[in-house]
Length: 355
Image (cartoon, rainbow, N blue to C red; front, side, top):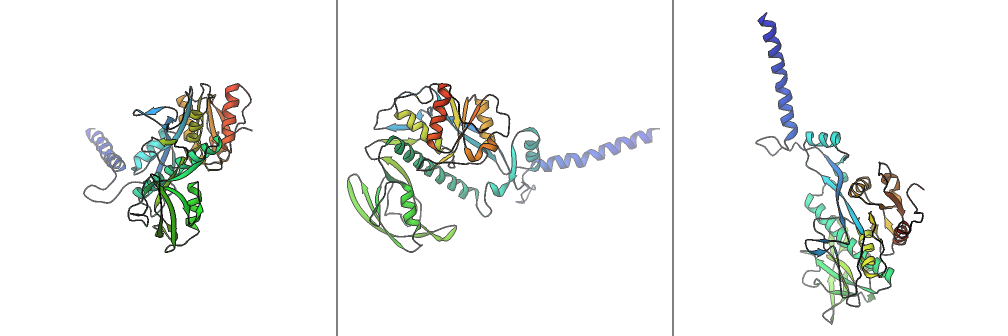
């Protein structure tokens, strides 16, 4: 009688070994003693931090304005983010799929094939800087304040090294006056790598010209590259600075524009309400769609937002999950966003994604 019992115990014990071993393999990211990766080719996207653009971070205003009179604000204008997890083991990916609302997507949708994590981070940071510049231009256009183009940085080993300096003001490209970064980019992209371009620059009241031979984009040899990042600053001495670290991509543009406008106008835009949102911003005021909006809606609803501003093109995804009592407004332009906030604050009907 002891034999069958022992046999069953042995069978159960042996059956446990491969399960334990598989569990161990599922939780590590490489084969021990080798460089062979065991991570899955997928990424998890979920709710990320949401930051009030009217508040301060580490002692600095998220949107800092100097050289102009600013006014007190009473509500919140929160930018939203998506948390992206990569380099996951199989068990981590399955765990997030089973226990969270994360979206599991192919890795190449987050990091394009052939692009390193470092290159992707740099591209996201450049997109964020361009978003800041567009946000400033759009806000200044809305407020009828003239702007000029300012060099924010110069890329290492680029054509502009030692010729263009941070804080240079770009007045003209080949004699054509410019006032927005997009105008500079358009004139540069009309050329080819190896072509010359003459920039009229100003720094500390001193004007100069620099003739530069354009390089080529590292990922496309047919695209000319000057190698500078640009932002916009008002011409009357006002300066707008965005003090957020470790955030990339262009999707905060609309919320940054709204924060600048709220701070520079005497009327309180939100009237004390908690507004969140997302969307790229073009210098003409157009609000563009973004990815992962369902996670931004979830984060905003959990944070207590009353109104969420969603690009019209994202409305279907924005309303695809339960968002409680939070109103989701459909916006196509900066004017739409401002009208939605004003309507909500006054109790008027808001154009929503449900319409």
